[in-house]
Each structure stands twice: as structure tokens, then as C-alpha cells.
Amino acid sequence: MSQGCLYLFLDEAGNFDFSPGGTKYFILSAVSKERPFRAYQEMTELKYDLVESGVGIEYFHASEDPQVVRNGVFSIIQRNLGGVRVDSIVVEKRKIGPKMRPEEHFYPRMLGYLLRYVLTGYPLAQYKEVIVFTDQIPVRKKRGAIEKAAKTTLASMLPAAVRYRVLHHDSKSNMDLQIVDYCSWAIYRKWDAGDTRSYQLIQPVVASEFDFCRTGTTLYY
Image 1: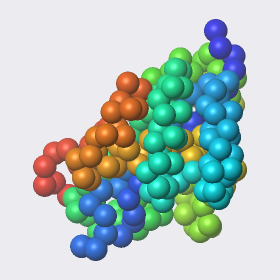
Image 2: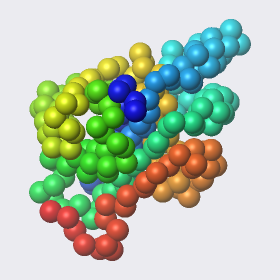
Image 3: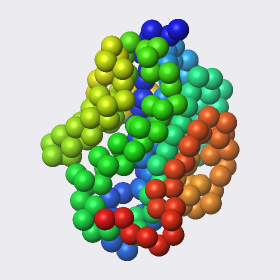
């Protein structure tokens, strides 16, 4: 029996622009795991190896990092898949109706779906606490809606004795937020561009990719 903490790290890929100029997909992903976080030391060593080689990298961000950096990060992630679970909810944005599109409505709803699916995969009574991390959320209205959705979902699913927290940390300071960014990017590349090179490296621990709009052309209001 664990009696430790279950950690969930959240990230999104794609944007909230529902116009023709926006991304085709919005993907919300979670990496869930327990301690110890074995990739931390390797990620730190990679960062300073890169610094010493002349790449003045501050932190890892998949969409901005050059391929040589991505290769190094994905190699570390692949070596440390034990005890890791990755879940994503995939939204084809053109199928989302206008009433659901405002960010403060859309994001919390997707977050609630994702958290419920992740949590059903764990024996929750075995944990003393569930801790959810997101990147810093600068818009107060969005932050409040997200916290409410997360806490409502956690409160409804966790046994009474299991505590929970939702923490907003700058991803620059949190290696696992950087890792979930990489996982989310790999899943996004698969769906958006048919590029599975990075996805194949994490596929063994991808538990779900739920297509929210899987019923064809139906619009969700």
C-alpha cells in the first residue's frame, strides 16, 4: 500500500484560437507518477552539458528547442518510463460550438474530463494526497475557473481521507512540467502532422488519447 502522494502534471498543446487561423487541435495532457522522480538528475545534467557546449538553455520547451536538444530530452524520458502514465484529451476545435469556446468555459471542462479519466486508473484510497501541478496561469478569471474545475473533480472522486492540492508553478522551475510539455508535444505532432517519431518513444506509457469529438461532425455546445 502506497500511502504516498500521487502527482499529476498538466500541459496543453495547440491554442485557444477557434478562427481558421488557429490550430486544428487542442490537446490537454497529464503525466502522473509517484516519487522518486528519477529523470530529474539526468535532465539537470543534460541542461549543463548543453550550457558547457555553448547552448545557453534556461529550461526545456519542446516546440522551441532545437532538434538536438529534443533528442536528448526524449532519450531521458524514454529511459525513465517506469511508473509513469500519460493521458491526453484531444479536441478537434472546429467541432466545438460557440457557447463552449470562451477559454474560461472550454479549458475547465476539458480539464474535468481529463482528471476524471486519469484518476479512475489509480487505487486512490492508497494515497495520502493527490497533488496537481499546472504552469503559471496569468489570467485571474481563467485561473479561478481551472482551480474550481480541478478541485471539484478531485473532491468528487477522492476518498474523504485523501487530501488534494492544485499548484501553479512556473514550468521553468519544474522539470516534470517540462517533461509533460514534451509528452504533450509528441502527441500533438502525431495528431496534427502525422509525425510519430517522438510519440513512439513515449507510446508504452500512453494510457489514453481520448478524442473528444470522435462522433464525426457533431458540434458540442
